[in-house]
Length: 182
Image 1 (cartoon, helix red, strand yellow):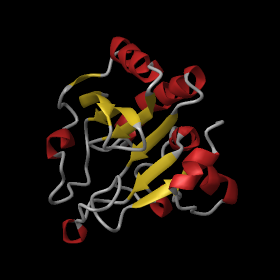
Image 2: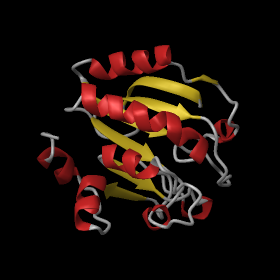
Image 3: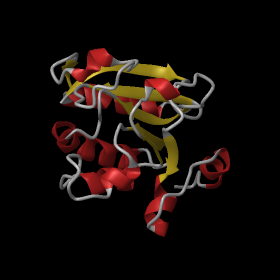
Image 4: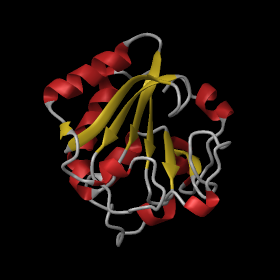
């Protein structure tokens, strides 16, 4: 897997101060995408164990609240085999930090076996997430006043609650603070 960018001390992509990983590779091709440079699977640099260590060290900083994973498309099948063990490591080593992930797939699509993102790694990845921002960017629904997303069709999903209920549960500010003991 390649990554297009790593932002340390990011305050735009999730609650609090975060380290954000922008993976490379995306087949959605959303018109107006803010990060079209990351559509190419070869964009950026190789995600190596050394890069992984640097990200973990950055998240370990006391004032950093968690990890945000964006793209490109993190849930492209090519990216999942690398992301799954990385997210396991973040969860294991930093259990008090939250993990957010942005995807152009909808929650409903991810639940279908026929979805291209449905790989042997998908359920493992979802089980590590606290918040999923789902849905493609839709230029006609662009709204710069929305928190943590670019278009009105995209949703903020409380993943642990959704998995427990076997139904989509929207994320809210209250849900993040109530679950800080994860």
